[in-house]
Length: 189
Ligand code: F6R
Ligand code: ZN
Image 1 (cartoon, protein in one colour):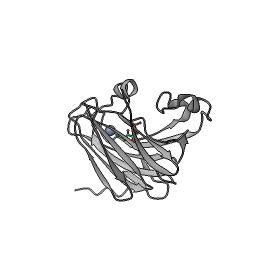
Image 2 (cartoon, protein in one colour; image 1 turned 180 degrees about the horizontal axis):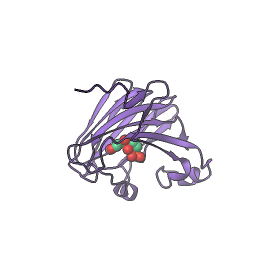
Image 3 (cartoon, protein in one colour; image 1 turned 90 degrees about the vertical axis):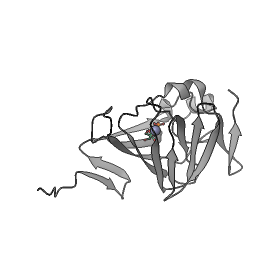
């Protein structure tokens, strides 16, 4: 029997970031998000180094391992490109049978989930809300509040990412700030 005294991995409640030997931190800046927002011209004239969202990703097992799990924390800054709120790029999992949990810890926003037939549904995210993302469902989170939006995610280590489909086809709706109210607008493909 052995007891591991050292904390191997840690979720720091101060800065809301994961720590540990297998944690990778990345961020997406305005300059990385070409074609993500509707008003590409507005995005291209903004400060390109400005951070839109950051992810700390805990990979305790090799990517692709069947039966393995990953955890990630995402912090979406408060902001807009023109009238569209800051949001994640969004993706579908390469292994389309993978599902995922998201749960909110700070701020408010929306979880957008879109099926392969492009029908979508939206769940409101707030501290403590839990969101189940079923298989074959593209997902994106939008920060519609007036502070940072922070959420955690847990998903299979063999899920993989497909960003290309969303990059090429987009989601079937976008969320805009219209006179202070988060407004869902359907998008024709
Ligand atoms: C993992 C997952 C999240 C996102 C993160 C950033 O499957 O859904 O950890 O990766 O919120 O969003 P994307 O990956 O869309 O840039
Ligand atoms: Zn995912």
